[in-house]
Length: 314
Image (cartoon, rainbow, N blue to C red; front, side):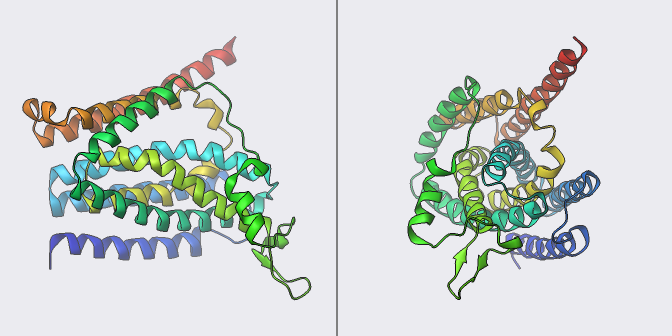
């Protein structure tokens, strides 16, 4: 059996067992997730992702394993930015806290399916038209520079959201949460609740974020195996990360600048691919990319905490 097939098989089995464990033992339907549970679930998904890193290291060697780790860290840090938007969406639709976990789970599973299709198309394009990587690189540099200098507060208005307006046109919507249901039938006619709308919006919002994150991951590796697995592990951990960080998300004030710097670095790497190849081999490039991600993201988080504590002390 081919090595890649073995890894995909192990990945699939681990994923199914992990979801059963997560949903069956760590989650309770209709209850608010506590900080302790959120911490346990976050650790669970992080340990699982790092365990898979060791498995890839054993099966494939150092370069693919480090590519996977770099891609995972890239996706994981970018997902923190998603959390802020998710909070705004929940607040805008007045979703009850006890429904957060279920709505997030279904929205995230939908997002994974969308991302698989997006990744497949992206990798296929790169394999057929390699120079498209330069377009991705330019896009990342532009996005990173724009993100770095962006200081405006993010807002979410349901009436201005294109997905919400589209759903209103094609589906009969109920203004209620249906007591936790996605579809209700008050008079025999199906009505789609606010929870259904929020699930769809969460999935599409994540897909918009993927327009930045997937090209960034492709700047680290163009291997389908690496992109699929790193994306899936990072996105599946997003639900527990949401509950863990939602009260402290505003403390990471400079994380946006750290992420923006990483996007610019990876974008430049993609644009200067041939020149960099003359100075560094592929293994060295992966190590440099991984170091840049850890330095920029870790540095921005530590600096954010430092500034937050400094302001409190005044």
